[in-house]
Length: 341
Image 1 (cartoon, rainbow, N blue to C red):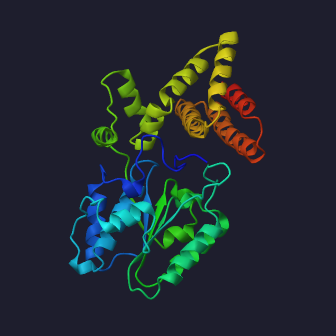
Image 2: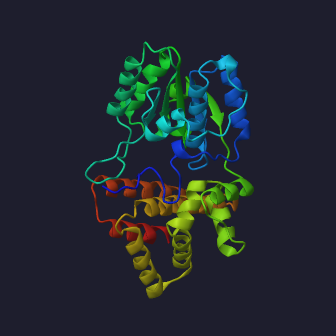
């Protein structure tokens, strides 16, 4: 097991330790005013693409609530967290008795995050509430993200949302709300966060010690990151720009040269500790094929659009089977590239 938290990208700050948040002032103001009114909903669903600051906002708001336990006496805005304060230190170390962070557990053997948040993890929330039931403090559960809840875990969370304990607050994160049980969504107040604009994205990266150049690489990062700091980090720190360039070259080439380039790309994507960049590539491939299907439909070629749309589903199924049965990753990638061409 490595020292690197598998939930945190290289170059990023863990959300509990991140004092910087960009591009979500309106959401911050809404949460602060709702809390101060004393009428805040017991479950807030923070929706938006991955890597735009939902978890940072959740921990920022949790810090605000725990620092100002009486709503009417709380400020009407969220201050930048004082990371040296006792509450901030407890939150950052995972030692707060009033805050529980539910996310995919880490496999102790591999050091990697497991594929789902299980019902055993959700039972921790039940234990958390039972232990703190007599304190009178706010008790906050951050579910990060709820998209990763398996069926049993989702049903267990649903029961808590239906009958929330007193002074309990659920901050439910979702990258893809369509994956959530409709009954979970219906019991939450939805707060949608938008992707970051170019200026906010640049400031967020600068706060992490990364500066975008004014050349093609900087333009490529701004274009392909789609307002997500996580995507920008994958492009900058995980070789994402090179992966996309190699993929584009493959799609534009033919014959032995294309085959050789496919093997080179497959070697990179199937190498040791390649999970992050492989996931990034598969997302890019899905977007590429979906866009190709859309363009075919707009041009009136419905047969091609249907064929390309089915290809998206077939590749997703192939990837799922390969992961489930631990099939040879390089051969799976080569097969996918063949199909995409």
